View (cartoon, rainbow, N blue to C red):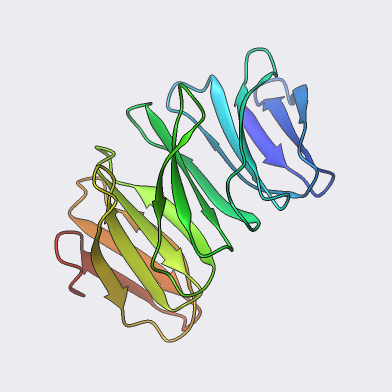
Length: 190
């Protein structure tokens, strides 16, 4: 299955082998700019310029939860790989951690001085890295909500951030046309 988000406020799910639309997910009131499937593929998380994210059941097309605590447009979404949580990033300068069972926000990650543009969990779901228009990335402890490291060195916005598969390093890319590698433990540039 493949998903597409659109300026028409919908997400379409596609059968890749048949090349046919399976369903259209309707409910957002703004452009969908982010979507992410859970590891099993039976849920999709959409993020929209309507300031909300939605968790959908891909088998039924039903909205399971609407995540609606951000004060600005959603820029990035991701399921945590163990399946208990998801995260959203927003132009409101925050990222949020959500409980998949209840749909409730369980943590708000603060500290960025500008839009949060991207986020990513490590493979164990214990750390979250964010990328921001404030020229930094941040590594947060998911369990405590604490910021473990601030990744400084880019000249201009940081648009993407991700952990390596082992979770020991973070890579960021920025408007300064560089990609940088950092220690996930202490935030030192490598």
